[in-house]
Length: 440
Image (cartoon, rainbow, N blue to C red; front, top):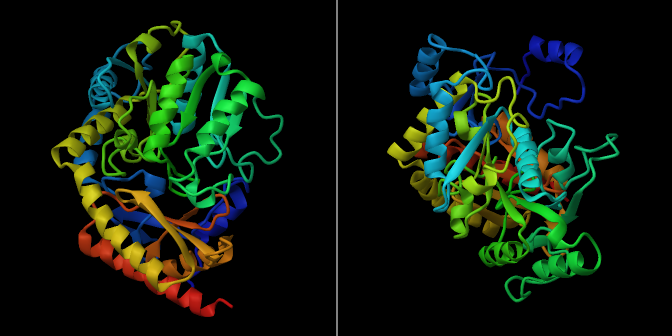
């Protein structure tokens, strides 16, 4: 396909710093539900959703109306200076839809990284403890230089040249069953990774009674849509409760219906002490939230939390309508139904192509891990990149993820039309077929 020169990519190269990477060399002009259009008018099916953000589709007319109405009323006054309706109305809705039966309180911020930072601040202030446990292969943000980065369990590219990293965070193996570091098979393993945690913190590292919180993604996002086993999470919560360690549930990427339930943690039947969310909360406007049990949130000290833009009125008004639409249109249920379609097709790809080593996910949050050999599980990193490039040429936008960048993750909007979902999956299959035929 002939390439038309894109002057905006030239401007980006000249004026935007190199540390901000670009995966798809496109300049997008506009969007319409599950479609994106570049400056040359070419249309793409969007399976990226701005990394799981525009779950209600691009240019959602109902959300545009809400934003326009709020813009005409109030843009900004700072919530620490004066109270305003959109913030407290959204806080009430988030408290009501959060998992578990405990009463909740809410703090609003701008980004996922900020939300993680503040969740950890809350945990430390409420418990009087210092240490945080996080997981290898995790991602909790790169927008700050504090605990979000320290808790991210992947060195490259997020931590390169940024040492020393903030101390006080201990990383442990995630229950990544496809690539178990203990060379075990689930469920026969007896949760060896959880036994490791118990022994490690008893004999080798910081004792659990000095740990403030453990932070976990029920489905690792940037880690490659790795799903934690249900019994692992349930036993983990029992262990943490026994030592007074708070469970911080990072739902920045896996929340808002994507897994087939409003919150991924609902698949596990446990109530987190603190839930962190962002991304899809306002369908693309900057906003994040920390929702915690009342008795925890009330231990925070006045004035030690906040921010000039946290809980912006326009973002809050849009997020409030996002909640309404999610509930009204039963979008978590739709994500579950669409996820069954996706999972069936991905399992078929596993049967057809040796490159596909694993299929996993919850709801419409599905992924395939590509390998050169199913027995050795050698990552097919280059092949993953080629598949994504071919898919783009055919009109489908995809994302990579995983420890080795060999995972193709699917992030279509929850509002995607079924025929467009099917078309995107067809393009994915065509792209895999071509790359596998070219591979040695």
